[in-house]
Length: 348
Image 1 (tube, rainbow, N blue to C red):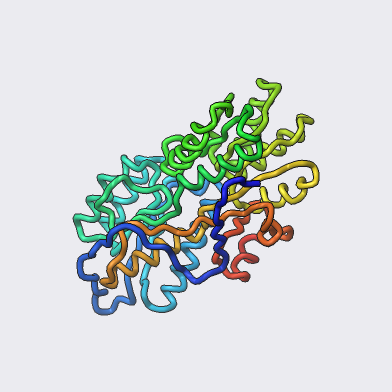
Image 2: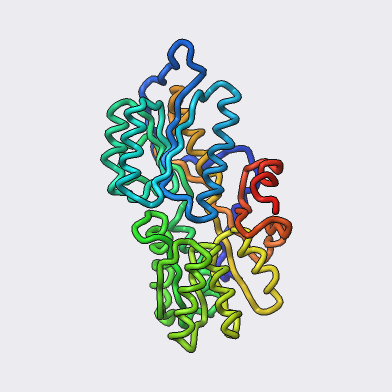
């Protein structure tokens, strides 16, 4: 357990709320829908739905957008997905500009590469809300997310405490070049730097994906007879690592992770076998919060340059509150989707 006192802010099915930090951005006067229009046109630029978090995140956005359409606030939503292709995402954003959307809500494949086209949108009077993987520009209307550096710190401190400050560990990172990946690992490195007897003996990018996490861990196990812990920044990767350890007949070791249902179910099933974990999470409803901020800006309200959601953390103490044995591994447990929508999307 943690030796340092950490206050865990567990957020579950609350009204869309957030902690506001930084200075406020004063938007241009809100665009008034033209006569005959029912509301605003919103562009959503996603760079991938290759893992279950990104699928759920997009579903949260669509669910909230449908609510706003029913209320007459939104007229149209244009969804794009670049499938990991940076050039395509740039083209997607430029196409949204051409279509004269009122706002663009974007999670960027590359923080730097997407900055110029987002600034083009801003220069044309379009509200741009960057969330999750931030665009590297101070000109965007607002950025919405969690403290990803703290995410990395929490996972690293857990591992250090479990190992008594020393041991050989391996690292499972997400997607090379993504802002989230870099920030989470930055937080981990800050903690590990304080413990010289923590030795990182292997690292791999595993795309926040179960199969890639399992394969990378199999390679680690083949190369290293001693692995004392796994620092992972993704739940599915951790689940893959756990399965690799069990398949190899190796003793289970502490592994950090993230709060998806697959890991939480595996964690609960193996608690009595000596497995321990921790699971902070960027809530999948971060996309819906980003849309809420976009609407606020379009309606002429002042919005902060940075919107920080609380960081929910699943621990040994609250694990049973969050795990959903009747739902599939792909379900993300920190959600604002209605029970009806969850059943529709995730029922077996």
